[in-house]
Length: 227
Ligand SMILES: Nc1ncnc2c1ncn2[C@@H]1O[C@H](COP(=O)(O)OP(=O)(O)OP(=O)(O)O)[C@@H](O)[C@H]1O
Image (cartoon, rainbow, N blue to C red; front, side, top):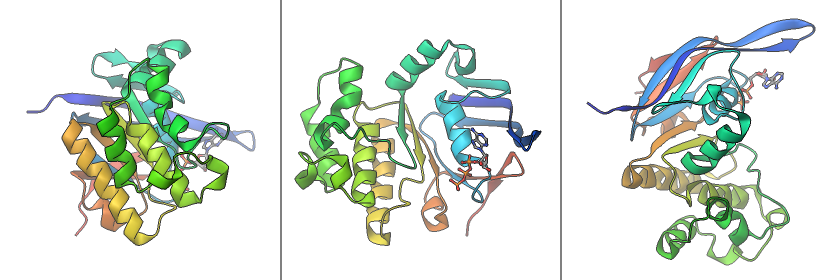
């Protein structure tokens, strides 16, 4: 049996709205195996981004535990959470979060620089070629289309070969054909690197290609079979 890489236990998260607490995640628990690929589906506003942020330690749950291997992430200091995220997590943000003052090449290589790692040139080229951004390396994010920025963000999230990859709508800005290619690339690299991958998506056809589909609704996760 595979070991659990990630365990969420009794996660609660609410936000204040019109002076009232509005519960978003309610006593949510799930375990994810190392190397498992999960699609996280659910209506807009159901809390998918919030859940990914909590798994990455960007946001904290109100109560509950986020455990990655032996580490209880939400009990770490903010500095330790940042260090953990930088080393172990690749995050593809819904709105890319590329740094405008860095070139595409510099954006992609940033996680290696922050972790003081040297570039694996062959892996860099694999990422750049398979996302078809070879011609964009010396350009700046503001001069790219949304789809181009999304592909750069994907390369940046994977370059340091993290154990856990979290992707928030990674194909949302792509046409169908490019979305298929980028999704396949994510799955292939996850299998090759034995990465645990969680992808929030509205695309059920792509979701059906993962190991397990989890639907977030009314603050809880239920497993779903897509035909
Ligand atoms: N920091 C915050 N303060 C107040 N409300 C918030 C905060 N973060 C998220 N929310 C609210 O929580 C709900 C869930 O947001 P979230 O972005 O997690 O949903 P989502 O499922 O990712 O949606 P989408 O599919 O549209 O990206 C939304 O109603 C949002 O307004």
